[in-house]
Image (cartoon, rainbow, N blue to C red; front, top):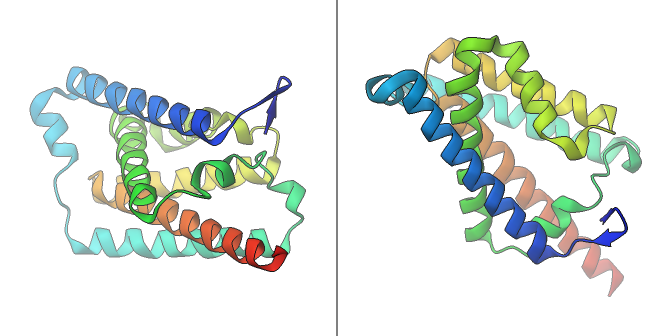
Length: 193
């Protein structure tokens, strides 16, 4: 990926990923305890039942299938993020991929659904979530996709009043799409050899 004439390598991108997700997790924890207190924060993580997890998995499956269909049938330049996902996840081990996706899912959902959404509502929270994914802002399809995904995750929070359904959906989406990307890259590499 070219950014201001500089080539960012995998190590730099991964470092930035860990750094930003660490900051997101810290911001989520500090702001959650400040806004909701200890009991309120614990309340965000109450288990709302398997129905919420099941619905989260259905929502995630729909988003993953739609994302794969967009990748297969729409022009590549509509979705090109500068190959950042390829560099970050391409050669990552399965275990590390899952760990990254779990941390991202927990941190982002805790901050956006647990802290921001109760005050700003789902639409404004989804807009903020979309703006934070700055690398997609020049791609209308990716903006719509991130906003729509965020809005659906917000609905899961609204319906179940628990962070677990949006966290589960976020993790399933990220892990599924990361593994799909890794599989696609391996296939392409095999075809080139």
